[in-house]
Amino acid sequence: MAAYNWNKKLDGSTFSGSTVDATLTRVSRGFNYIGYFLNRSPDFQPAMSFYDHSNWREVGQTFAYQFWPNNPWITRLWTEVYGARNWHYDGIKNWEGVSPTVRVEVKHNTTVSAYVWEWHDVFSHVDFAQLNHVTNFPLVPAYGWRSRARRPAFSV
Image 1 (spheres, rainbow, N blue to C red):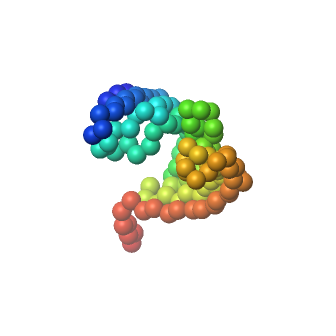
Image 2 (cartoon, one colour; image 1 turned 45 degrees about the vertical axis):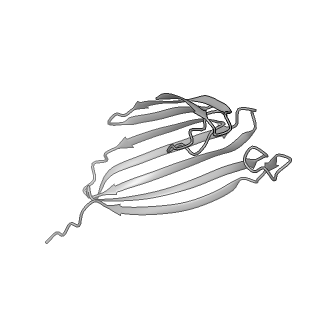
């Protein structure tokens, strides 16, 4: 997807900019891949839009593999790794993160997921006008799990 905007303020000044959002997806029965690139110029500032960010570039990838073991209880196993990085047009990194995940599907109905999410934030005057320097935050780990059922199922 690509877009270009042009705006004129009440004082007569104008600004314009572009955005590009590209995604490559490969989904199969075993190996899956999603890669994306986002490039939004600093002047891409539509006054009334769903886009609330400008001046950033982001690249991200997800690698996943799934298989179906010959087991009456565990019907699918899925592993994936997601990683992304975001930076401003001036080259200052904004954030980066990585998240490995394992999912187990039980009896075609319930999926249990466990993940680790580690990220690193960097803020500067581009993010907050009050900052006059680049502030690096330490690597932050997070852990979690989730369980999801598709439909209630009862066996007798």
